[in-house]
Image 1 (cartoon, rainbow, N blue to C red):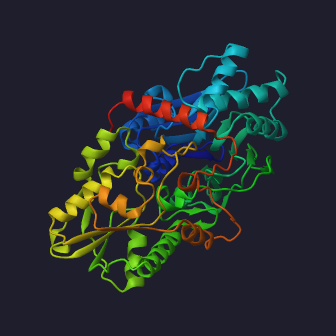
Image 2: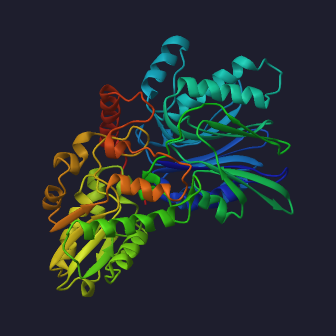
Image 3: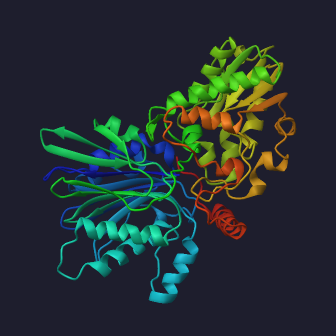
Length: 496
């Protein structure tokens, strides 16, 4: 999971300040590193490890000139998370391109070895984007002779080569100096990407981003999603050309709606906020139908479960209370680079309001349980605050399968549900809770589909082990899991 924004501004403007504001609005998608690359007569670059607010200053905004630019926030699922892996990446020769992406290349190591063997190419980082950039630039340079101008047809042809060679899930934005702005989405549309435009006194602006909230905040309108396997090119004259380069079934990631995306975003015409409300309503019905004990109060584990918890309380006619207060200056524990950082941050991140727990049977609502360490600590906090009983309601099914597409779920052994054979009561026992209910998988999918019936299926790989790209073998999972485990062991401490 990462976040990006690319901006094509009117001639004479500098887009870096707008990119900076956009990165702040998607800081939740990556807290490990950030970067901005713009272009005038040359590329201007600023990247670093840490939060957006700590990397850029006023001098950077003065230096990052140009009306074409891309920005990125990163959390590493491939690579060591060092400064060398910070995006965007750019090349000057044989064709100038600056690029950023969100996703994961499942054949990254194979491509890296192949290019090193066949062409002698050596990468400067352990980030999979560098391979994707190389494939794109190589394909483009094979079509465009020295001295010729790159056309939209050349760009679309190069994207076609990327789709043929690069496997996995990825959404991409790139700027081509003296050519324009390019965006494309993987053939199955697993990772989200949107684009929009706005009119100002300076002229017409175009932008693409990982989430619609980026464009909302910046005042863009006519915001649309790119489809699965679709590429979009915006020339220097502002002309937009769109092309479906691949024809595969659309399988957007359901976990974006469960956890990653901000509630004020729209993904594939689906409101994240309303979907989480539907999750809560469905979970309430399931809770009652299963004969689960009736709690005295429903309390969300902030933030991404808040909307579902409120809907669940309304559906069940049970009081909703804010019993856990979040320190907003602590990062999301799910995307922290090491297990030690996740565990040590929980108490700093959350604190209880004892009055909402004392002597009560409390139902805590959360979006998901991966390893269970955070959930166990919160259950203990609830008991220490005086709760009589502690129940857990989870707005997604048990997580049982590694995600090779860019979610930090590396190996099957890391899933508490897998360890417990997906038995909710056994999971509850391991978490020291009195009862636990997971949202049924089909109920989750139905709740998401209600926002846009045109999306017939979602990627549920982390819940059912069915990988839509069709190329994920146990060997691939073992390789990716090994890479992530190794990277965690050498990752820098969390910055922020």
